Length: 254
Image 1 (cartoon, rainbow, N blue to C red):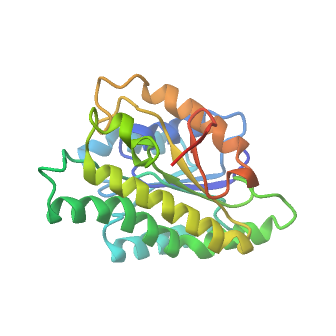
Image 2 (image 1 turned 120 degrees about the horizontal axis):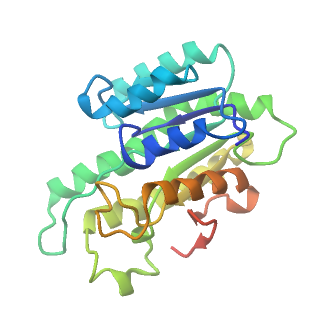
């Protein structure tokens, strides 16, 4: 991985935690990894804190993506540690799902999921945008990519409108599906709006993974998914601007 400075939300478990671990194992790991989570002092974050204790490049930061004040405070902490440098990669990984069907869904369900899965990534991106712009300016001669400046929104194939006829009956999770369709649109709009600033914006489907969100029946382990994601991040280019790419590098219909 070429990015020198990277921030990831939702690092207390699953894909976020494994991203931190595998990034540290790269031949040339990032100089700084800002690993954020809602409550760093929680026992649930012990594995993340253990990683940080062994790796000076990892800084665990409190960031609740549903709380604008928390996002602002996290940004101040990151700014202090950047020491004037830019942030090469921001990965909006934090997300939730709840059981939800056409029959059971209600306003509380949708608002709860949208606040975390759509509004959160929007606010995080807006708040950290100056640092992404700074990284792009530092690497002005480079093409779009993660070694320059990139905003990655973790999405899902379940947000694909194209594929919903086939897979909705088996995996309804209506509010989650709709939120990820919205994330795909957010990513497309960001790619248009931030292209002039030299920032690559891409949505990423990590596969169906054996996490608390994906469940034990999922075909992919966390290690398999993240191993693919790390390779994909390294290969992203201008052709991936505003699209949904999966953990194997395939561009998905949505």
